[in-house]
Length: 454
Image (cartoon, rainbow, N blue to C red; front, side, top):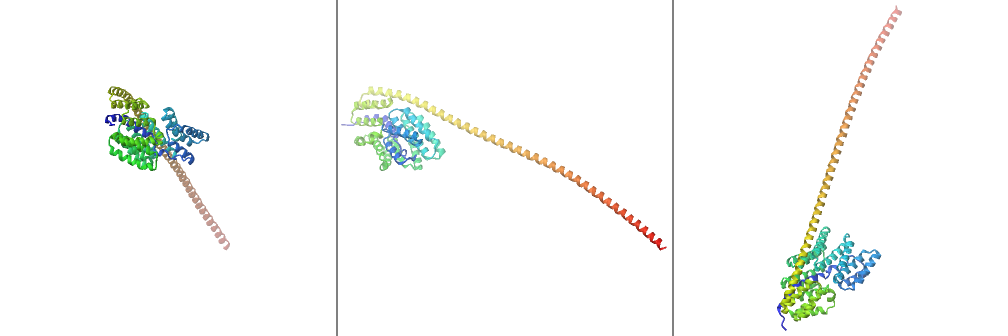
């Protein structure tokens, strides 16, 4: 049986889907005992995380949350909610997913240390799901908020996760070069944070961007860089296999693609590490290699969103030679893309408005801070001036008091000197009178003696 190249015309849509699917797999850094719970609880949690989309995780999540509420242990509640929201995503219960993430944010955003790291990891995973749901603007807001918080904390972990999300958003919008650049920044900050376990996931994402650009040599190189880590992270094997299968499919190496596909089907982790849409797209690729077009169309009807169904089905009809139906599906796809594009534009405007409002709030805060500083400075200057005037007034009063004291002292000294002079004059007068009296006494005695002698 000959494999016809036109079948590959449908790869653009499911390629994008596969790229987004892989982003839903938890980064290696997520399954880390960041909250430092007891080893038994963590082992149970880590085992469940390895099967993140399994509905069996919901009872465990409920038991952890209940125990956390009963014991007042916020860490158990965080673990439970982080097990819950991937399942809610897989089952389409998006409001419950949002609620679970909101509780994690409430419990961890204001705490430091391991709680902050857990917050970064959980928000990173949540943003991946937002991208897959087409809520790229919501994801961008979360990523930029996470980046600002990481800058304030000087934490490369938060910056690594925020750049990874921005890279996924650019991939979603088919901006491969921007996606690669942001993903490479994420790899740089992951190394700074000591998160080597996150590097293979980033290498896989970069490899898929190069597949999209048909740069297969670069894709293979990054895929091999990721494969080195398989020894340490067994679940990584699923990602590497699917990436290689995608590359072989794009290259037209059907034998290698089928070998990878069959190996995936035989791996029990495949059902738990891939959501239903991703497995459905891989099945469609396999059916197309066998030219089983009707079966592929039935599979395409199982995809979760209209745009994904139209995207895949128009390629299948074209490969089948049914160009009328292919044109009809393409028309529906264009309508859906236009509505999504308008929605994304509106969301981007909302993001821009939010960022402008945040910028205005920051400017107002800076202005208020400057005004407060100016008010404080003016108050300080007024207080300094009043204190200076008070000192000057006190000095003037002191000078006046000193002058008055000097005047009174001068008057007292002059009076004392006048009194002393008066006393000296009186003493001189008394001395003179005494001398006169002595002379008179002497004269009388002398006359008396003269009289006796006669």
